[in-house]
Length: 181
Image (cartoon, rainbow, N blue to C red):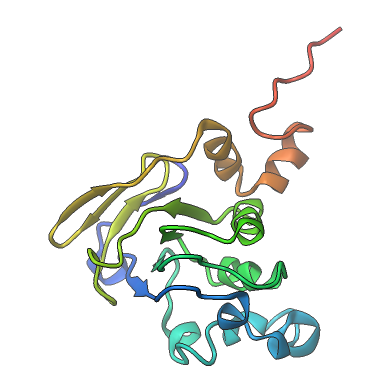
């Protein structure tokens, strides 16, 4: 299977939808009092959505997809909110719009973020499949074509994150390799 695909045959392990509303902020994702330096590097992710969805951290499964409303990730630029989602192995986030710095933090960490409004299409808890390379999301009532990530982002996600790509290749995704002298 190609890197970045969230396709599973075992329906007991298929990604599920976690649906949220508009203006989910970084304190909703990970309240400041549970930051890694407060709660501990090994457990801070267990407080994701602690106040808004208390069951989230205990029930989320690797590959699950978060569906949000407008302005996902507003608030501070603290990177530990998306880090908590990365540690929980979130498969992707789909929202009509993202706060710019938060969006960049998601991509830096290798979390796929798609700009589309699926709040009226998907239901909380239903199973889906998502190919993050092509943007094809299949749900019980049909298929949605999300805007596929640009090539530079697919390169980064294939390595795990923008940082992992840079460490491996010594350049940023989308940049041409230096010519050999």
